Length: 573
Image (cartoon, rainbow, N blue to C red):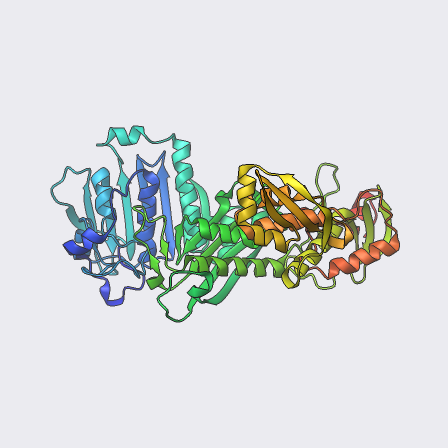
């Protein structure tokens, strides 16, 4: 269980030399029960396990058991593995940068044994296995005996922090501590979806994944709805570190593989806790990578909502420093900006291909909400080519017949999507149309807004705002954007500056501003919407890359199958 997944001839457990120990920023790794689980799962995965079973009693201080079907250890290795700074995952004098294993410091089992009673049972395929018992700092040497076990390793940890009452008292309640463990196991299950995971709490199974891929892992971690409304992600990108201003040694481009699953924008959460990223199979906290995944969703997400996603980023091991955090929950990426750009691009491309083309059954009761139109395979080409407008409802909703469905379009939301994509394309290829203010308008700004105006002057200009400092915290506005012939108010420059201040990046802020600009000229309730206007709107919507959500994330089209009417009217289909 302590052997690196690709160690080859390096399976033997050895003590690290003092110089290597001094270079490793190890520190105390066991701060709460979840850390025990993390270290033991790392070891199981490094041992090539295809199945990992975790069982927890209470908050984890009473008992934690982790069993795997990896290649196990011989007796001599098992005895040495519980010593501090003894490992098979790193050569005695090797550089931790570039290590391919999840655990490498050679202190996990020793640190656990220092805070609890640890029982390790392992077998590398021999006739007799080995049991090693050590713990709580009371025993001078581990007790080693024969044991019956199939190939693999089981570690049982009991009485965690029994000799450290202050540490135990500092823990949160049972529910909170187990929630940490559950979230951690979910991270691993989604980061390594070809490994089967089970998590039991007080004898009941709370999480189970079959190890048959990321969609099935989503089903085990979440539910059928989330798994069915998600697209798998798999792409490889050749990244030039210099292209994103990353520190580079002048070498060739590096290969970045991005895999995982992205839930459709209709499946969201209020917080970003369900956006999971991993690097080379190691779950990590990395604001750049999570921000890149979020940016890849762009304006598909409703305002104030966060995506459900699991994305693994595979980079050459020599471009990763896993030794920057005592608990190994953060890593150092040599080409962080370039890798983040690649992740954002891959996510955006995947969602463009899958978009919101999916269909859900529509219930006949009055309580169930309609679902956005769409297919599971993401197809969307010429979605409305054969659709026939048949009327309007409440001067806003267009009713359209399409095969055996009644489609209902929110004319304003659909027109917003069309206008947004027009603006976005114009922004890419040529300046946004502007109108000159004569005389120029003077706009008073706060100190923060004035600083943002100076910092983002070039971006403001590309959006159509021609500004110049006018002293005393004011700017003079000479031009304003005029998309579709409608000039924005000079005060809209404040909205632009607010977008830059609140957005995760200038690009995200720019998209928010374009979405707002697209809203103003779009159809409103009461505008004349006849059959010709509906047909034109359908044609333009068909030309959009993402026709099934407005730029603020709301659906543009809802669907009611003919079968729904037949059931409601008790007719034969």
